[in-house]
Image (cartoon, rainbow, N blue to C red; front, side):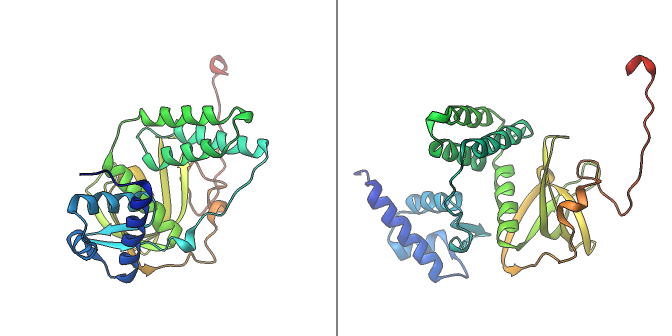
Length: 255
């Protein structure tokens, strides 16, 4: 079978996107293949490519469009010192990640592509991406990570299965209000509203076993949610209603 050109592939992806947008309630992979007269394997590959691009998502057996246009990142022009901030942020992300994350790898490579080689940063960023690629691969974690990010970006409820460090797994609906990385435990946390307790909870993304995006269920972050202010007096991501002053005394031999 002749290899399709890049232009032909892009045209097919556009057709697939259009079909999904015409059926917001979702279509199965077989239905999409039949509508477009594509082979099942081709349809499967294209759908997962749209998924990686943030243009489609799968819920159960059905594929749905994502509201990509409303979430498009605008063109960004940075002077060298501001580009360095992004480089340092990328280094920090890699240091606190103990699992492979292809979404992060792709973002790092794209950032490297647009940074001028005159700055000497693009090769550094490629190296950061390669370092991240050496982490253990976990498809389940990558799927959960991407789904939680989308829930936060599009302000859509998530249905998650969470497995605490001590205790049995439980299911809850969750609206992420804030995402926060932590150097403790190589983790990223989501703070938001949990239906199980009808209140704020913090969930470690690495302990979420399953996450489903509920695109028809929107939420709004309450105006009284203090956001980053909540963590100003926190111990990493651990916070409470009161500020507690702690006095530490060290033995002279360890000072």
